[in-house]
Length: 154
Image 1 (cartoon, helix red, strand yellow):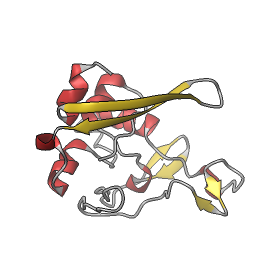
Image 2 (cartoon, one colour):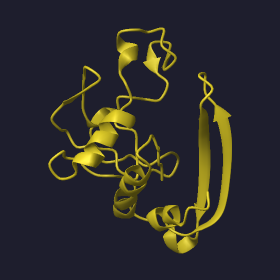
Image 3 (cartoon, helix red, strand yellow):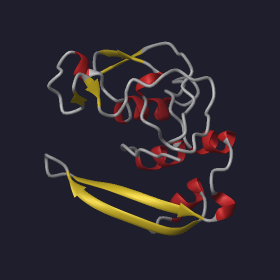
Image 4 (cartoon, one colour):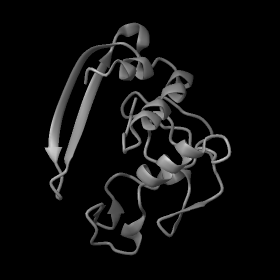
């Protein structure tokens, strides 16, 4: 957690808390809470959108980011075909996917912000037709740096 680039991507942190869990295959999985100094806290929808994205980037504008998002940050809709999947509970997705399309990011005081997810062309990911409604929120800088699943929420 001492990577200075994380602070540059998100803002200056004044506190951090993390826990490491081991998933069903024994792989480590971390939950990290970063408390930002007041000057860096997300105060507007525009500020949130600069830091957190929830859309498939253009393969023409940034092929590498497009590849990482479609490989690592797509919430699979496999529960539709198999209601017994771990992501399903009483016939509904536990993680509330697919999300609704939105033309802008909006702040929501009681829960997470509602991230911009413009209607887009569909893309095929692991043989399934998917679009922006299935993208897990991410920070482009951190995603390009680490090339792995990094879910970032404001």
